Length: 478
Image (tube, rainbow, N blue to C red; front, side, top):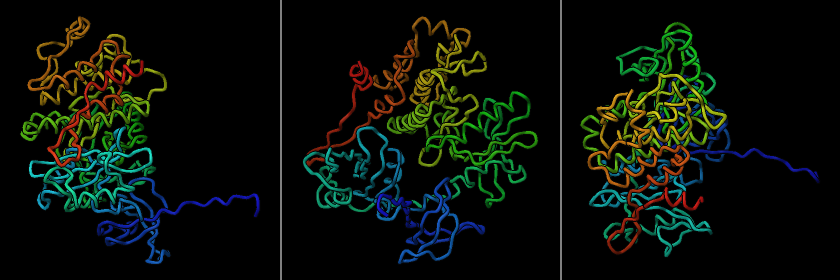
């Protein structure tokens, strides 16, 4: 067959990391170590064929939760590899019982200058190290010791201290994931009958509806959040836009849509339920009061990650505030309440509606109805103030009617108590009167990664901090 190229479809094979008992006729049950070949990997539940030790199909086909699977022959099979985790999640996992000094994990990073981070439990807390890669593809913590892969790097620091007095011992205990946290439906089957859901206690109110805790009866009473929206012409359009928005975007820091009910009054938007509620109440509560500055900055970083994803997809939120960020286990954050969100095809979205969150909205949006991703950056500055002040109301003592003049006079909120100058400068950058001079969320991702990483050394660890990054980025751009 000279002159022809035979195209083959790559075969994706996976190994299960935990036991799983499937419910219903379509979900497969399996044991840790079972092997599968993927047929369809769309959504949170993958269609797979079970394969035997020789790689042949057994004839069993069904759905499995994707987060129980590791691709065969990759580092995902390693007990120390934890995919994408935030710094706070890594801290919480390593400080749990069962993990002693030297316990460690490798986590994915979405930072621009490194792909992975090594987190290690020491006697005085958890230390984090950037795993860098040189132009030859070799991994290293410092340039004096280079490794062809992460396995070799981990082996090396089992025998030598990564910092003085700390060597790697055992991988961090890995919690089994919850299949009930996944979207239970294929991505093209959003519409469900309202009878499948039971409304529970009211959790709060959004801009356009009430939010209840609820149960999905067909999923062994799976706990969900149900936003109810009363039918009228305006709300019907809001419902359509919000659900269309949630269907198109998926990110670990955006709220996951499970189902919609658009028959009957009220409409339902069914999403995942996050156990700790909204960020504003969390910050004002006992857990928020005890959270360290590092923990507060990790929450801010997760919000930035979610907003950077929206920025990359030409989306604006228009209602970014602590009340619209939800908190789950290990302080994972999800952006929520997308009733005002829009996908923009031009540089901006024009709206003259007065139904906006006044104290979180940028001056150009208040005065001219001009909304851009940079107006979301302004809102993030206010949200960062909420985070660092642990839930103080913005602009105390200033009414909505007075706010625009206050801002046009160049006045800004003062720094929260015990907030560092560096963090306050990020807020001031977000509140630049010239929208074009505000940082992008991509620049904020870099500048807010200002917590200390450690360089491996036989001496005392020296924290390396990123300073003045926004200014340097802009200087280099010019």
